[in-house]
Length: 134
Image (cartoon, rainbow, N blue to C red; front, side, top):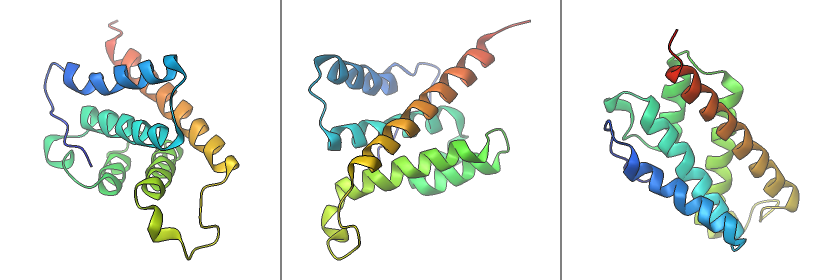
């Protein structure tokens, strides 16, 4: 888990997104890097949305706290959990050697991309809806 600073200036947190974009642009992104960046994207989103006391919890707890706030649809947090679980698989690979299946399949990689798309779309929706003044 990365500790993200909450502040009025989120430039430090958005460096992660900039790095992610550059990796995609260079077409040099490997699957484990995709998992890592996807997880960090979820962490940045939650750090931006959660109160101070909830933002330094483990990712699973932070996602559940965000759902309990009542402002997000449950399927969005389920996408966050999928990203968390698939990225954990890449970080703690040896833990799954005796499981079936023991490794992530191509379809799982597609699911990760779908979840990442949905999370990114959600983030853009809440960012723009909060910035529109009537």
